[in-house]
Length: 275
Figure: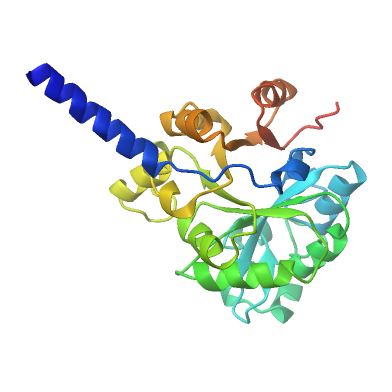
């Protein structure tokens, strides 16, 4: 009797776990997105071509690749394309992008080159009618709603194919409520192993790593770090909900071929997929 009770409890807990992982399946927008490989932060080639630069984006287009890029909300409400909030690594400046305005971007250059930090509008203009974009929203200081709304408003102005992803489930919740037509993806990795990425508590890092808020965000795809993808939640999302998996960051032809054999979309870096 005790064994049966334990088995029932385990089964119920597993069903709850599976429900927490709920994904949306069958978005028609995924069809075109599946036709491309995506250059991580543009098809950069350091030190000459910095990440998230217009040169890196033009190089991706020249080679017919899609692009993954990062978007931040600035102090004046405009949007900048850069990975870190701090400009220390990319521009050698002790300032955060959220404190800058469009005009102030002119004062900074990327990684010792003449490349400027692009505005999101500049990148969208470049990609009109061309290859797709994976737009990652980088939240800071609780600005998830303002950032997501501003990014969607900007995307509406241009003829681009895109999807939106974020580590922050609140961005996806906003999209689910206000822009359900947009292809949305949950980003994740081994938060528990990699420490406090954004100052999250231990329980929250567990929730984010296991994607236990999917029931609230209902993502069309899960974008998981390649080296961390052997995660039960990823396997269950694929098995139960048939969700599209995206892998980042692919750094060799062998990794790319294995990911694509599994039916995954690839975000690559530091090599040319066509050799």
